[in-house]
Image 1: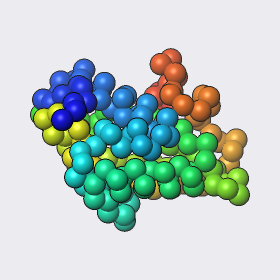
Image 2: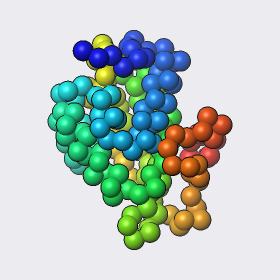
Image 3: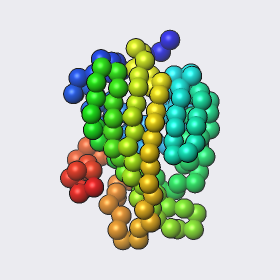
Image 4: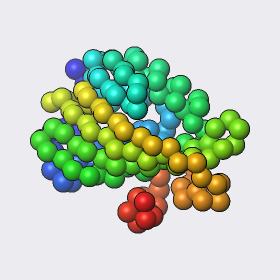
Length: 155
């Protein structure tokens, strides 16, 4: 069984680290690699889609990033307890017609003892934006450490 540090129970520091690692993974847009952070039997609710298991999660992510082009995400810790973390996030992307969106959401995560996410519940809203309204302007991939977070960006 693989482990995915930091492991629960979480502290403020380890919860922040877990959130940043999740953000970095999703910004990689590597569905197979990102799926390894979840248990084999992970359960998700993403909007109105229900996902059961790591293989379904990987397929979902691949389809997501095939549709959501130029995807850039910022996550921020909202709250945590022993093995649970709540985050708020925003991401920007455009469709294949060049229409830009900022998607806002909240997620509740639950981890097993190995630090793998076993449950993920996400609520997301999409806001159409003009390209000139974008706030996430780093090269594709990991957000630079000195790039502002959601609170600093007024989101």
